[in-house]
Image (cartoon, rainbow, N blue to C red; front, side):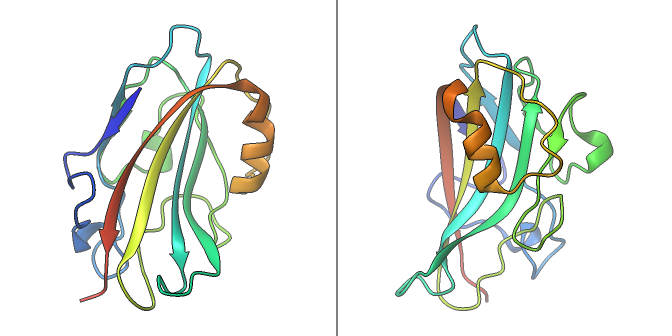
Length: 155
């Protein structure tokens, strides 16, 4: 399984357009190699370097999606709720809301991981789960995963 973006290179800088200093929209994402036995996909975007990469204390969650159809091949740049693939459900990020929240590091250069998971089941309605609640629900259903990492430091 593989995930990539046409908006930033793996390991490269995420353009400010996709951050709190820009339009705060999600970058375009594409994926391939989904196992044939997959029944749904989940996507999590997080930052393990919060608040300071030299002394991280938590992983800040930027986006949580689940029950994406396994036939989907990606998400458009700046996708809104009504543009998500049919059946996709949203979880809560660490701003206590659904939807994408872009990089906004208080200090230093942070790493942002965009992770796609192939699951052998469609999950029940989890009522806007946190990342931890989603991970617990999908734990026994994981088939494969892939990630791409980009970095950002406020300018």
